[in-house]
Length: 120
Image 1 (cartoon, rainbow, N blue to C red):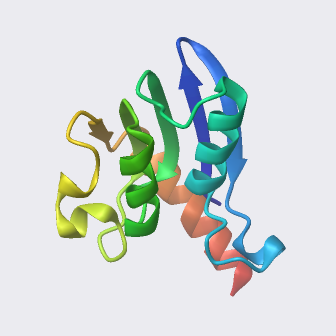
Image 2 (cartoon, helix red, strand yellow):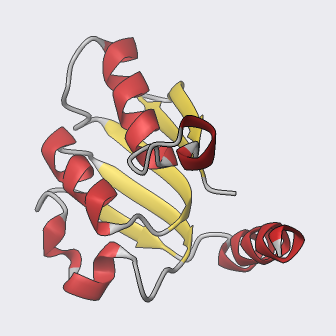
């Protein structure tokens, strides 16, 4: 249920969704896949002029990857109080990364709840 889109200079350069079950890979989070795809599309590893939009607050692993990519802006919907990167403070992201949380939070939370209620 987690989806991510990377926009650079007004253009969508990457789209991804969580594929941990499909790929049997615990690192196949939407953010990780989107970072890799965006870097390949723009031809460079730094995403300084890019924004990542994601339905759920990134976990610590994804925040670390976002740090190394030097992401310009992070916009997320639903908060993840237990596993989200903010549990350790926003300093896990690059100091120049702008953070905007809670965008369409209710809609994102509803999608997540619906997904997990169908799985159970």
